[in-house]
Length: 215
Image 1 (cartoon, helix red, strand yellow):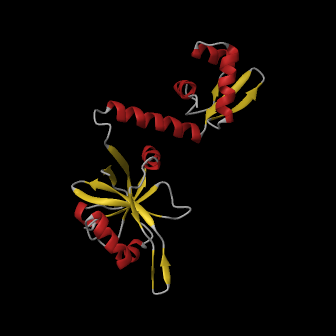
Image 2 (cartoon, one colour):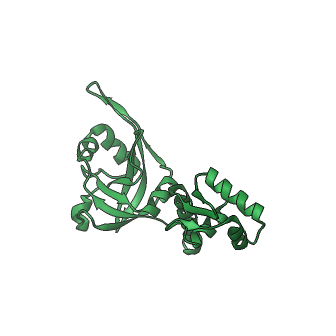
C-alpha cells in the first residue's frame, strides 16, 4: 500500500470532498514523473483506497472508507510512537444500552467460574456496552484477545465460547468480552467488572468514556 501518496491526496482535501486533480498536477505534488503519478493513482484505485471519476480535462478523486481506515491506522501508529508511552492503548466511545442478554449469560456458572479463575473476579451480572469512535474501532481490530473462555453444555443446551482481554476504567479493573459470533459488531465492546460500572461511575447513555487496555 502506498500510504505516502494516499496521505498526499488527503492533505490536498480528497478525504473531505472529491478533488479535481490531473496526473500532471499530482506528479508535481509527488515530485515525480507523470507516468509514475498515474501508476500510483491506478494502484490506489485497484486497492479500493480511492475512487475516481474521469472528466474531459482531468479526474475527480475521493478517498474511500478503506482509504480513511488506512490513514487512521497510520495516525494510531504515530500517536503510539510520539506519545512517550507507546504501550498505552485507549479505547474511547459512548455508553449505550445493550440488548440485556449480558445479565443472563454472565450469571451462568459455566462462565462465572471461568471468569473467577482466569480474571480473578466474580463479575457483576451485566455488561457495560460502549460504541467506539472511528479511531478506536481500528485500534480494537488490532487487539488480540489473550484470555480464552471455553463453551459448555448445561441441561442439554450448548453455550458458545468466547475470549476477553483486561481493561481499566477509572480505577476499576474489568475485561472486554467477545462472544465467538460470526457477525459481532466491530464498533461495540462489552465490558464485565466485579461491580456495576454504570452505578459506580455514574454513567448514563451518551456519556463519553475512555477504557485503558492492560492486557
